[in-house]
Length: 225
Image (cartoon, rainbow, N blue to C red; front, side, top):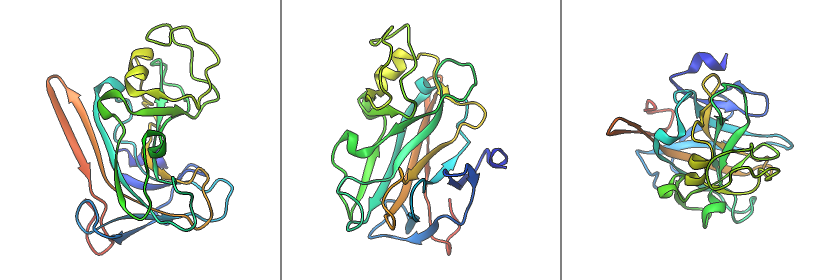
């Protein structure tokens, strides 16, 4: 049961919505890992719908306006994938406080700049409010506030900045029950594509304080932190 893992990070099979800690491995490197010795490694199998996440439910119900830091490091091996392939960040979203499933917000590194292969990249999914996000639903939900008030039929592939999302949906939060936050490999992506994830940072503001937690994924020979 995925919801029993509410305070942990785990490997999540996003093809069938199950916790499955066999779909990735904790390895040394590649190269010099951003933190510690290693990272979590994913290799895509045959498509369609081969999607693998390192994820947590620890932030379910968190208001988007309280998230001040959201970043992760990624590494893509060249050869199989396209030049802009990369792990990317997703979370289940509740735009209006209803607590119902409303698909996901998605941060893709290549939609925010270069995504070089065979090197570690740090991806800032807030970027002072300028980071661009897409929506996994067919169209963005109607909003009555913010810069896009009353626009209808806006395709989910239309990019919106983090600041615009906060303005358009002031009550938005990570889904309170089943609010997965994670980094995914597979869109689906090409068979045998290999991607690595490390150094996930989440900063939440409470009052005047911002508490930033950094997650370091380490090889199996070292206890994960």
